[in-house]
Length: 176
Image (cartoon, rainbow, N blue to C red; front, side, top):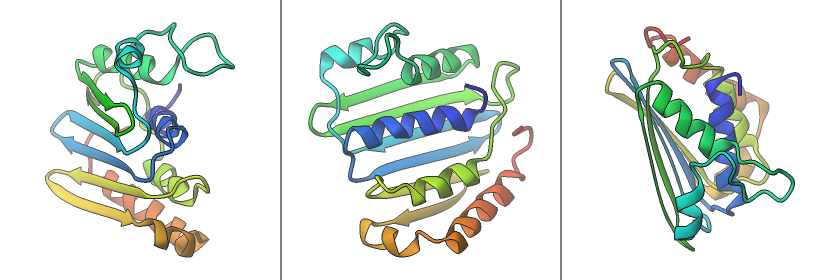
């Protein structure tokens, strides 16, 4: 994967495929640390699957012979002196908590978070999505419940979300 937002997109796709009704993405910048949390109420994972997800050779995808998303993000956490924590309860959902030194030489180009988030709000399979980001302890929340998602899937809202997020991200020193 080339950009960090590609990793995020891949992880969110896991939640969508797990039939989550609500997916929460939280991005927090504090000093040199980027914390990322993805919480969903999808089908979750069994203990057996949970024990395998960090391995590159593991996949639940029938079309591939190797896994990508979780094993690659696990490796990126380690390469950037971060942490990887995943907890899942079958039929309840999954909690993924990651941290990275986003100024580390091995941290990829960040990508366009505003476009990613606005695209996720427009995603037809997404039922409910909440995005929280904190920059230097300033918290901004976008929470669009299921009932509103259909009404706001418009170009105007998409552009507003993109510009608002990207304007605030420019305030983060060293976020490439």
